[in-house]
Image 1 (cartoon, helix red, strand yellow):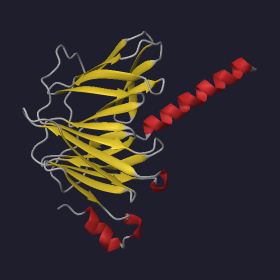
Image 2 (image 1 turned 45 degrees about the horizontal axis):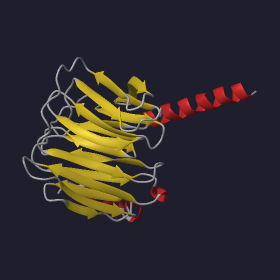
Image 3 (image 1 turned 60 degrees about the horizontal axis):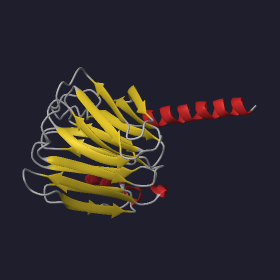
Image 4 (image 1 turned 120 degrees about the vertical axis):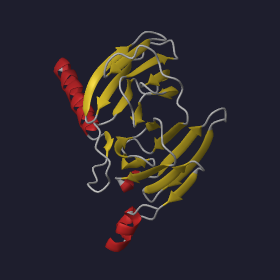
Length: 252
């Protein structure tokens, strides 16, 4: 009976994991009047395992690389990425906690690798062989998404060339590869009763130190922009009229 209960619990956890994966995606918006062709769903790299396990990582596509650190669970999502892509993560503790990396390609899980070794290292790769890591991203533009773990966040991240829809659960760090000019992040907390949402915009350009701006909102909507660290907290769109909602969605 105990064994059957354990098997059932594992099965339910697996189903829950697949449901969570299915709700996450990054892709090019399909506005018919934009003149911008669609691109395949973008990659996200999810660190899972024993909650709270700390790690450092190096993530690279064919153009840019990023040095990262975090704790389980955390998702790193490349916006405007260019394949192939590769990630190496190393536990920073000497215990036997499980650390796994999984690649989500669009809506679908693609690759999984794990380690339980003390200070263990794990790596995953997608889209071919990346023989060498690319130079450090310049500018290095990151949107760090924080909210209660049940939260689902949707919106857009866009530069002057492309606009990418996002649908991710927290915590997620979006890494914009080779942005062209200004970058706007538009974030909507879909389950408004989950609590407040915080967006950190971190960016480094050339030899300059990393800049950070932060915006927290209980209204469920935030716009935050690079460069300049301009943050705007929007009113709750559920209280807007139809005309005001159209205006809220209009570009600046």
